[in-house]
Amino acid sequence: MSGRDLLNEAANGAEEAAGTRDDVATVTFDDAHVLANPWGVDLSDRRNMLKVASERLSLVRYVFLVQIEDGIASAAQRASLEYADAVLIGWPETDADDVVAVDDERYRDVVEQTMLMEDYIDRFRAMERDGDIDGMTDTLIRITERVAHVRRAFQPTFLLPTFAEIRRVVQDEWNEDMGKIDPDGESSDDRAQELTLQQEIDRGAADSAAVDVQERR
Picture 1 (cartoon, one colour):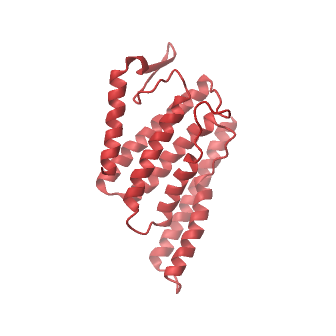
Picture 2 (cartoon, rainbow, N blue to C red; picture 1 turned 180 degrees about the horizontal axis):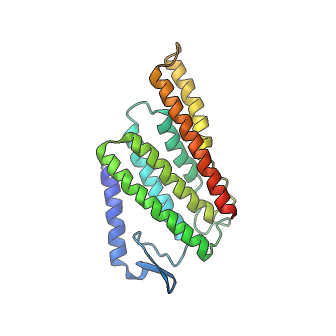
Picture 3 (spheres, rainbow, N blue to C red; picture 1 turned 135 degrees about the vertical axis):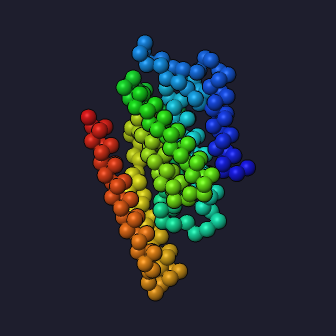
């Protein structure tokens, strides 16, 4: 089964579950806030959003891996994949001791992040159809960021690395690997990619700082 088929099957399964299980079709915050539930999970237990986030990211990560495994992955591709791995590693069960209950405000944020995740997954599916590996690489980062927000809400004591941190380590490793392949120097294309990677690092650091400021508020 291709990566595209896996994503389509997951999307269809979520739609069927939402359409056939009336008891979990929506969840009500109060009289003014009713949330649609496309995943077919019981949202009366808010911790089930942990399952949604991890399962969706795991699927997208696998599809991305299939796309890049036949060639030599670029530093950007490696970093995107390793960021997803870092966020998924040791994913907690919903009843884990360090998983906390979230209040209404925090839960709304979790739901917003999850819906953003789904928007990015739709883009990822379109890019996979078009063979846009660069777009998939960047979009996997965006999906992972949304999932990291969800995990941080329910498991605040678990320290999650930022993409900028992952990128710096991967860039060093990639440079070392490329030096072994071409010890005489780097081409102009390599230099251009390095500059692009540094811009991504700077953007990731800025995004992370903005998130920290928002969470302190």
